[in-house]
Length: 68
Image (tube, rainbow, N blue to C red; front, side, top):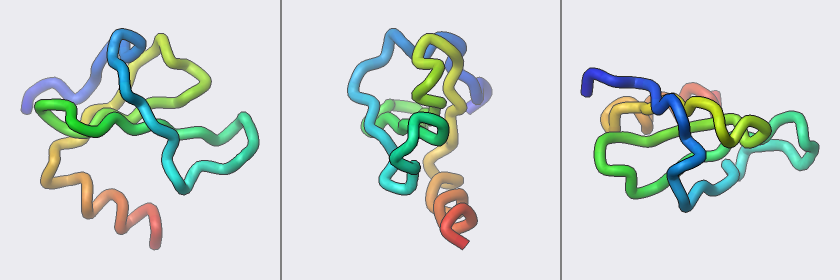
């Protein structure tokens, strides 16, 4: 996968808030399941902005690192 950024994530549907995001409006991370080339992650406060695209093989280690 060469592109690691989706420049305009608002066109994608099906975003869900991460279960590890806080309840306040300042710390919401959203992820999109079933994207064909990776796992997009965006800041919910900026839905029209970019999303980072994680390769599937990097997603599980990333989550483990965040939890740790």
